[in-house]
Image (tube, rainbow, N blue to C red; front, side):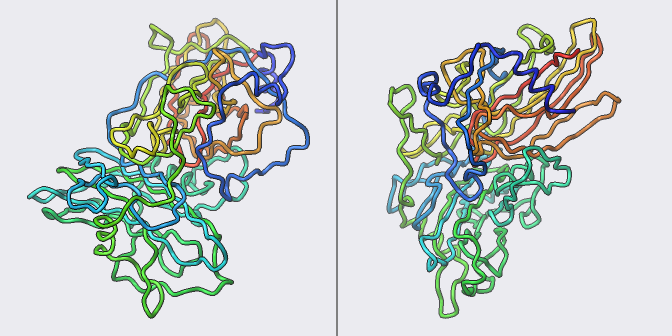
Length: 506
């Protein structure tokens, strides 16, 4: 369908007689912009604004998201996001016997848990070509073997998920649409995939440590595998001429969904590739253990966060390094006291807040950020943005009228705010900075009675209304179910909304 009728529908709901200017936004919205994404080659401005955009507000219903996060613990390593020196990124090992006890959080995982790891490197200059490595080690502290089972698992570098300036909306059935490693990673996990180099399970002997990930995070091209399958027995990494070097920045995103039949400790570590007479080589387990035992937290550190509830001129969210609680948010979106979700009257819409954070809840007061079970004192108080968290939302759509009604479902990125209730604000034209890039799955029955599974890759920018993604016509009194699934990607900036609109032209 054409986008024009949808936009006309939205503009008909506008509550104020005149739009706001950008200058007035500073007075109208008190919340500071939430910026969790580090600027990189993917999120630089792609559009040059020639005129100042206007702020367009809409009166409409904005609801908190029903349901809640589960209690699955997540090893959540995202600080410091930009790695500059060797050291410990995150360790849940006990403090005993460690040179820097404050670098270890003493938390054992058992049963279902996730490992999320997202970090960036950037070359200082053209001569800075040495390969940096990420290592994840898992230790069995017990006196019996422990088996670790892999449900889904993937790890990607930026070069394996290049940004090509994609359209805002692309169908992604073939999994060939992605924009950065986080986007590609979450697409794989959404489809319940385990990359081939990850085993279905490993068994760790009593009191032994297993090297789970030993993967390069290079600032130059490599002639060896980049998928985390390298071991200390692999060939040396030869230095490459300048003409073959890749980008001067890189990111690696990793997400593993695991279960363990016994307690295990986990650590994420970083070091430059060791040097030999022949060039660089892959680090060994023994070298990783030296970092774990004798090392300190990697520096420089990210900005120290503002404590929740404290008044501050600038609220600093900080980045996450610790154990967060919650891997999945499952919800059934219905009207209060009902088992159904009645579609809004014609020309109106309902939005549900997604991935809300402190001071940015779209007036709902609901903070969806996962709580931290363990954290370093200079890192985020909550898992802002819920990177790697799966949202599984069911909408039992119901047409309560005696006329057929056409509805559309969209995902939108309104301006962040905390002061407005039952209203959203957008920019026209929307901003150039990308706030969301990832794949969303829509499961539904179309108007021809066919079951559909539409994977749609979205790119959204600050203040973007968002086009209709799924359109359905419900008969009088008809109920039809729709399910929306996605994993919130790293390098996205929360929050967003899921919006249900009934068209004016019914």
